[in-house]
Image (tube, rainbow, N blue to C red; front, side, top):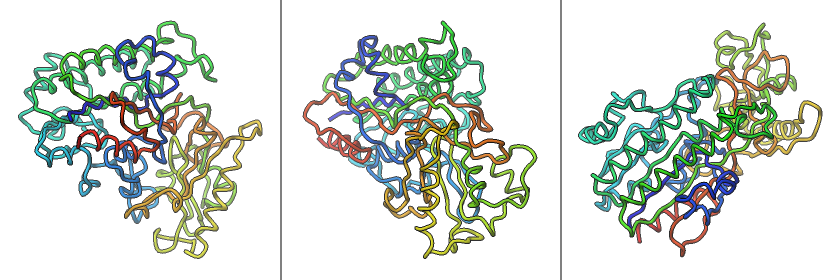
Length: 446
């Protein structure tokens, strides 16, 4: 069966249901919308990889758009698809059967897999002149025809500090450009599987939620932006109507997201917590806030006496300074689980600034991850206040709470539930990201 997947990164169930009456085309699917529990953590790269492979993130050793370089404490590198090229994804299954595939902007697909079809790169592509932007090279002609004189927007760098009206305008335009490319390929490429993932909703929610949501603690009244999120979804709805016009009638549709969204109230300065409780030791306290990487480069961290340190932005990710794994490990394997639980219990008890109890959730690596690369995953993952609090890893801060990191503030955090709905009525309802893949696989094999 032919399958078209429209992915909306960070699409939130509650929002879609609330504005459903304003989405005349998407409402054909959203009227049957379901939620599933996504990966831990609910982060773009590991979530989409799991959704399209059925594999737990522990198989990939990935927990964000970056990963920590083994043998270092604070050196991180950007994700690259070569890290997961040995695994078979949904598009591989279809391509290997001799059928055509279209992949547009699917997070985790750069550099592009050499499949039977066309791949247009995701937000990891540096610019449109890169060889990774389109595979095969000959398909660039179709992209050029789709765009005409318009300049394509791969992503919006620095969007967290951008003028909000300029950002909103760019995100609307990006939806148009993405869908023009996708529609062009649908018309001119033979395909049995077509996947398009739109990132504009995610970018807007992270930085413009305070304009959309009057209940947000940092709400800003702005008549022009108040309905902005609805306008973005309505633009997607418009282009969905165009998809309905060009695809064959026997096409199965899937609408899905990798995770949801919810307002972010504050961040926990996680390394400040660990410093104050004696798990992270400093040789010298910085005179101004520094990233963990900068503090490490300046020799301010005493790794020989450190037990644990933290990373993350939307969730807390904690590593234990384990002997034999870390360069200057201090914790033996016999002590490992006990130390993990000590740190986990400490973080679970973090309160709000006024002392109110928070709904914190702690996940230990051995409980949630499976696969051959679990050794690369954080030892502890923490959802602060059910993901209404994020994380700041900087040190030298005067408080245990903050709003901004070094790259800016977030109005929105990721939610633990993604959305999923198919136009087919006789398929099981997926409850997890792994089960979503099984449903997709069933469709393309039918």
